[in-house]
Length: 416
Image (cartoon, rainbow, N blue to C red; front, side, top):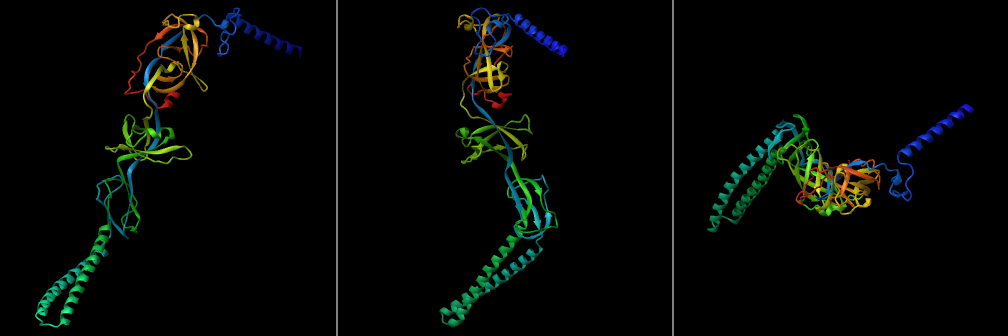
């Protein structure tokens, strides 16, 4: 047991010696009055800093930014019809197959019409016969009418001729209606396309019995597609009918589309406080298919001045978004003096809010001004109040501040 205690005491003593050595290497005790120079800012005491380490810095610049949101939706045809039969009958012919393009009014299928044709022919014959009898009765009536004026025939004969003519006239009307009804039944046995589109599915085979209302085919019109998205309550006033949006499809990379708001549903979804918005997109080459995943991107904010920084200056610590600025005034220098390569400054930690991004650049909102030098390399190891040397002042090309093309990208990109 004494041996184990001795081993533990030796290990503890060795650890203490290592800590003392590290403390001594970093500069030992701070000078009088220097203790707490970094207090309250999350860094070590000022006396523990080594000589100002080198860092790379880059200046913040001014740009024009606007908020842009990206919404997910699914493409669907502008028109999607289940073509059904209006009459009972046996499927006799199918003229199209799945995937075929059809014209408006084109015959897609035909039911057997033998019985209807026979009844139609009989009704037409009866009508023609009755019309002939009507013509003869009309002539007889007109002849008797002239004789009655001369009082050659009795009133009874005249009345009988008038009744015969009127009865045959009504019979012709009834037979015309019967012929029209049978003709309509015959016509409806030919199922026609209600609009131009493509056949998505065929649900019947030749020889099957089809009842009235049974679905025969599915027809899609993809010349224009619609995408329904949900827009948050705070944005809905900025999305009028006709508002233009950018649309991309995961299945069609590199092919951007432009859509317009067709309708804004005036009632919110209670659970999410979002409003359904319907967007229409021209699809002349029919590349967009029903069911494709769509990404709708829209600029919903007004362009305004903002500060743009390199994404590499941004440090994320939990929920905090930080940048580290090299501040000459904190080292006793002239606050207005420019910093350049070889300059020594003091690190100031600045909390910001990340805005939209474009490429390698990030809009930030907070106490950062255009021209501020921000640490772009070495920012993970610095502390507030620490002296640093600007070893390299980077000057890369930055996006031009253009009010007609504000920086406005999916905010989720800035969270990467």
